[in-house]
Image (cartoon, rainbow, N blue to C red; front, side):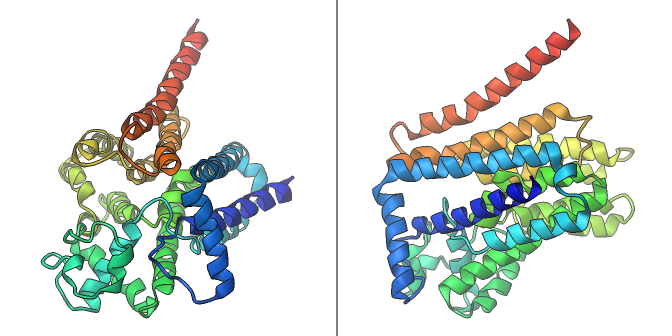
Amino acid sequence: MRRIVYAYYILLLLCIVIFSYGFKDPNLTLTSSPFLISIFHQLTYVVYGLRPLATLIFISILLGLWSFYIVVCKNGEKLFTNIKHLAFFIILSAFILSFSYPALTHDLFNYVTTAKVTFTHGENPYVVMPIEIPNEPYLAFTRAANKYALYGPIWILITAIPHYLGNNNIWQTIIMFKLLNAIIYLVFVYMIYKITKSLKNTLFFAFNPLILIETLISGHNDIYMMLFACFGLVILKQYKFLGALSFLVSVLIKGATFVLTPLLFIKNISFEQILVFSYWLLALIFFIAAPIREELYPWYAVWLVCIVSFLPMKKYVLLYGFTTVLTFALELRHLPYMWMGYYEGPGPTLRFLLTIIPIAIYIVVFFVKRLGKRI
């Protein structure tokens, strides 16, 4: 039974990697191999030319990931008999997904192009926009090139690693960014296990489909911000200066964790209480500030999954359940654009309904069950 589940998951990951290349930007050339060019052409035809089919494929993959996630969260102790076995499986999964194309978003290309502006052209990314670089070939497949750097200076410094390892080869650079994301993801998984000593908490984070899609496939940088924020909060009481320094690094990667700053100065508060406050403060930004600014982006939920993964699971059943359903609902927000090819029209309404309906159903079912137990 275990081998069947393992094989199913690895096959599913390989399908995701292959399917992801259907989202390749038409202006982006990844290889000169006629064989690979032919495969990419067929895949992009499915994604851009047969949108309903591509949407159904994505839904099937998403349901496959969620079915595995549910099985793992419920039967993790039976599927993984020892921690070394689990570690190998998580590392293998992260490695496979690192070779996927950054589908569903163009953010990674902004990271790549901003790094090139900084380290190849020697310009200040907070002063010079990518679009101002004459004859820059990366502009052909970079979105929002008419903006200054959106993230902090620590993030810009981090991007130097995959930039130089990429050796000015775009495909190699993408893979280097993805591999670095995988390393940070693995460090976070290890930190959860080390702090909580709980296999269930570790599994909850490690195999969450939103974490896999937004961190390892799409390549968003939120996991970096949360790694340093959570590490800072973990060591804050014992090593106040190092904890505050780690937290500062988090803010200088991506500024959302700035909202947690007051927690650094509150005395007589437990780590568990800090986590709960952190969860709701970040949720406040996620549900109120983010939609006002632009959009309720799925990858912002990485913040909430990271925080809740350190909390005792039995004590915070509602919070775990809400976060799980939220991550599922947010991934559904990709469907309208995938099906229609544009964001306007019925898109905003459909995204809202796909988000709110699963959450509303969960909340109703949860409280009905609670009421039934009391009666």
